[in-house]
Amino acid sequence: MRRKHLLSLFMLVLGVGMLVAAVSVGVAGSAVKKSGSAEANKGGTLRLNMADADFDFVDPQLAYRTDDWSMIYATSMPLVGFEEKTGAAGAQLTPQAATSFPTVSKDGKAYTFHIRPGLKFSNGSTVTAASYQRAWERILSPKMGSPLGVNLSLQDDIVGGKAFLDGKASKISGISAKGNTLTFHLTSPNATFVSILSMQWFTAVPANLPYSSTGLNVYPAAGPYYIASRDPGRSTVLKRNPYYKGNRPANPDQIVFTPNVNRDQSLLQVKAGQSDMDIEGLPATATAQLGQQFGVNKGRFYVGSTSCVNYMGMNTARAPFNNVALRKAVNYAIDRPAQVRLLGAYAGKRTSQLLVPGIPGYKPFNAFPLAGADVAKAKQIGGAAIAAAPTLNIVHTTSTASTNRAQVAEFNLKQIGFKVNDLPTPATNYYQVIQTKGTTYNFVTNGGWCADYFDPFDYLNVLFDGRKIAAANNNNYTYFNNASFNKGLDHAASLSGSARAAAYAKLDKDLIQKYAPIVPYLLPTNDYFVSSRTKNWIYSSYFGSPYLNALSVG
Image (cartoon, rainbow, N blue to C red; front, side, top):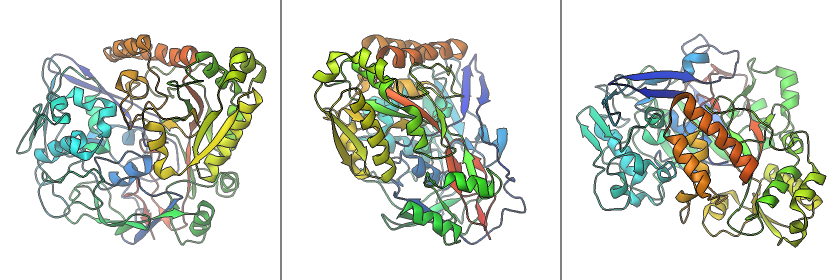
C-alpha cells in the first residue's frame, strides 16, 4: 500500500475575510497518558524494527509511504500539524511554525501565514518563510524527478505552479516569502488548502536545500529530531535537535531504526526486550494470542484505527478488464472474508466501497458480497467472456503475506473460469511495474489508500481522474478514465459542505456499482506490540501509528 495516511479533517469555510474551522475524526481509544506524564521518561535509545522493509525515502519532499511519514513527522516543523495528545485534542490541526491560522483574502485565493520567530534547524540556521517556499519548489521542481505532488494537482492550485513544473520559471510566482511572512496565491478558492499544508511534504527545509531526484538521506531539520545518519538497508538514526524549543515531546535521546528484520524474529526480539517495537506491525498469526495475554490497548498490545481502505485493482486499459462486466464478475468472485482472515485477529472490517468512515460523503453500502464469494453470480455476469479472456497477469509483492493474499485471489478467479499467470514482484520495483502507463499487468492484489488529508477529493479525484494519467508514477494504476465520471469529479470538487459530501457519496457508489475498477475488501486497523520498558503510548490515527517522538523508554 502506497503511503497515504489519515489526516484529520480541518474543513475550511471561506466567508468574507473569515476562516472557520471544524474538526471531525475518529481516534482509537487506549489506556495512555499525556506526554509529560510520569511515564514520559527522558533519555535512552528507542529501538525500532522494520519487518521486511526499509524507508522508501527519508527526503521529506519525496517520501510517500506510511512508515516514511511517521518517521519524518518526528523531524518536521510544519506550518500546521497535530499535537501529540490523546483523544479529540490530538485530532485537531493546530498552528506549529505559524503564529496562527492564516488570514484569507475576501476572494478566498490568498492565504498569509506568519512564521514564529526564533525557530531553528538542527544545524543552528534560522527557519523563515523561505523555508516553506523551498519545500514547495522541491515538491514541484522537474529536477526532483517526477514529483508526487502532481498526483494531487498541486501545480494547478498555486499561481505559477504549472510554469515552474514545466521548467518555464525559476520560482513559483504565487508564493511570496519575505522574512517571516509567507503568502500563497491560489488559482481558485480551495476549502482544503490548510489541511493540505499539514502533509509531511510541506515541512520546513533550508532555503538552499538542493534538489535530488534520488532523495537526500541527511539534511537539517527543524522538528524535535533530525536524521543523524542513514545507511539504507542497515539503519537510520534520529537524534534530538539541540535547537528545538517547541512544546512537542522529544523523549528518547535517539531513535534507531533497523530495517529488513524477519517479522517473526522481530516479535521475538520485542518480547525479549532486544527491540522496543516493530513499526511495520505484527505477524498475523500472533495477534490473537497477544490480545488474549496482554489485553487490547492496556500497555503492551495496541490496536488503532486508520483512514485506509485495502483493495485489489484491475487494469481497465487492456483486455480483459476493459470489459466492465468482467470487472463486476471479479468483485463477486473475490472472497472478502477469506482475505481478512489471512491478516489475523483485529485486522479490521470488511468493505466493498472506496470511502471510509469519517470521510465526508461516506455512506455505507454493500455493492458486492461481504459474506463470501458468490461464484454463481460471478459466472452469470461474466458469461462466455470469462472463458474467452486472455490469461490474467497477476502481480503481487514477494512477502509471505502478499503471496498468501494472491494465492487466495487466484483460487477465486480460477473458480469462475479465468486462467492466471502468477507474477511475484520484489517490493523495490512493484510500484514501478504497476504505475507505469502501458503496463501489461491485469490484476494486482497489493493495493489500497490512506488519506493524505481528510477529504473525499483525496480518494476519488486523486485515484480515479483519468485525465491525470501520466507516463509514470500513476496513483490511478487501474488506468480508469471515464468522461462522465471525470465531469462528476469536477462538479463535486467545486462544492462545499453537505452538497460536497452528497456529491462524493454518489461518486463513491457510481465508481463501485457502475464501473467497478477495484475490489475493495478491508477497512484495516493497525496493531503493535511494545517492549516492557516502552511507555507513553499516544496513537495517531493520522499516521496509523504512535507518535515516535512521544514514546519513552526506561
